[in-house]
Length: 234
Image (cartoon, rainbow, N blue to C red):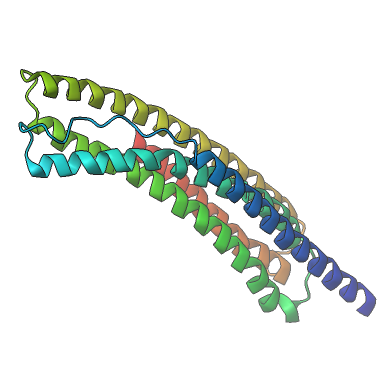
């Protein structure tokens, strides 16, 4: 019996070490690719020339902010993709959750498993929130800019055409975000299913079932957050 417990602890240690190493290598590679791809970002054409005297300083400031924010959409999307890959690590962690733990080590095991789950899911949610907030912010500022433009003025008419193009780019950006969220929800569903299947093999008050249930709550809440983003986008 003692050898069995030692074996379980060795398995947990090896898997945890492997996960940390894998996550570190993956993050390093993603950062390298991100840095190289950022150098190829093409700056968008300004909505309207700064010298245009027909635009107030406040409106021009908004235009400058939109120009800057537009550059951030692609990096924001890449950050979500980078964090999305870490959900696969949690897919492996779901097997760790399924390992048998003694009641006396339940609390320690719970902390070891909850911390990486909260960390990874938290970073994904943070990246998603940043991207959707960026999209909302740009659209709000575009509305304020449009309200100050006069289509009878040639430079303003040209600016309105550019704004229409920005809206189309933002629509594509939202579609990409929604597509990633669908993948995240599906990945979360797979983890929840595995946890439910394993939990069904234990009695309700078995420490292992309680441990699985505690871990499951994080995934359930995460899925709810992702679905809320999708609903808000409709």
